[in-house]
Figure 1 (spheres, rainbow, N blue to C red):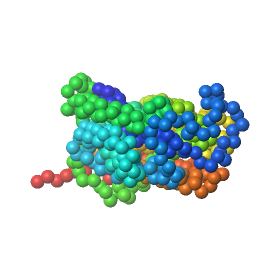
Figure 2 (figure 1 turned 120 degrees about the vertical axis):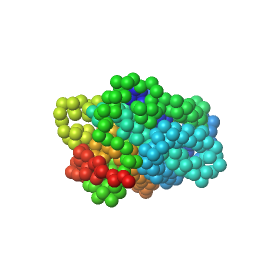
Figure 3 (figure 1 turned 180 degrees about the vertical axis):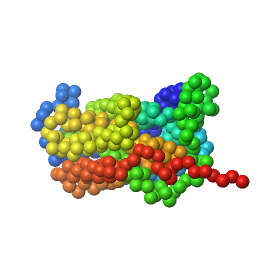
Figure 4 (figure 1 turned 45 degrees about the vertical axis):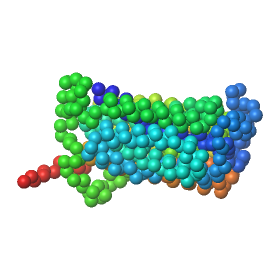
Length: 462
């Protein structure tokens, strides 16, 4: 049953991330031209037959079935980042609320709200840019609550020796959501128009929220269908850990904790890399290879299906290494290193190999594919260092990390607008440098043992 909970959460994350990243592929159709100055297409290698032809302007392949807007790269950056402000604000409070009133209510309501707002986005875009940005901002509040609230499940459902695989099964739904929306979104946009991408994933999200309310329970004790042996196994494995609401949050000690800060910082810098893939893979492919939106969707989605598979395998790898008596901190740092350093290096190399279509796609696929390995590292490190405060800390660290989702499009918009020749190269180098900085700090200061401030403290009761 605990794996059933993980798979339902997987599809919840699938829905939330798909709704979050729809704009990455529909932007190609909404502005009818995401291309930046045409210096980038220096390809000397022929594209495959399915991608060749008169593709020097991707916009000419789009059917006139939906509104088209005249948004500059800076405006597109603001649109990309508008949903992220709510993600930053609500992931920490979402985790705290889930610990108080239950994950089932918090995440279910957030998922339903995000889905209804997704259905409203085409109307909001037609009403004007201000309405569009406001709708996405409120949607970000809902999605942030949903992301942050889910982590309370694993305080009560995940035995310590299965945390990596259960959490990565759940979190990998985000990657599958990106893959699906990029693949299907391009086809829907070309066939029916970009509004139907929002209608499809918004309607699907409403159905997913109903399944969430039916199938999810906050803990094994309240679950009506769990077997007795499984319930006893989970409860006995967690018998030394209890929820944070029994004791006040040690805020001062948390603020002074280097292991906690290193985890949060590395999560944030890793998200620079992740958000670069999510937001700019379709735009980069469109800029370099001038493909139509359908082929762009296929090429952009390919790295994410690889990432989905490797993300799940990374959780099993981490638990396998632990079963072979590797130290917990060694496993967390090794997995985090694999999910950070090689992808960042490959991204930095992209501008230097863009003359080769095949090499570019290979580099994109490998770099994006390795990124989710960190899900079994820094992203669940809070369960190691402070299990009783894990839902609050995991939500807060993810909320802080989403500041990168605001900064990435702003920085990218600056480079791609100001420097017509070296924009992508400079942007990718900044992403590499930021990612490397966070990784080094975590490798030096990261811990995996329960911190003193997170240990049990005796409470005096009258």
